[in-house]
Length: 88
Image (cartoon, rainbow, N blue to C red):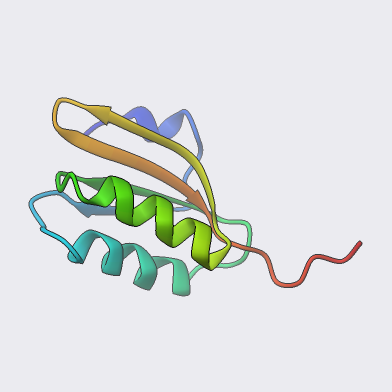
């Protein structure tokens, strides 16, 4: 297991290696649904399509894609769950 996730502290991790589209995205969605606003999800996947899927999902759902890396055929993502309504 890659230990890079310690760089950005993740509240929850999802290992979606070996799963093909759309399963990495679905696993990320399920994990985020169970998390509190502002928490960070770390996702590891091997499906190249996850690069497009995760970035687009974060954009549409309002989550922050904090970081996305590729190393040795694995894709690593850190997403911060969107907050409730921002008070300002």
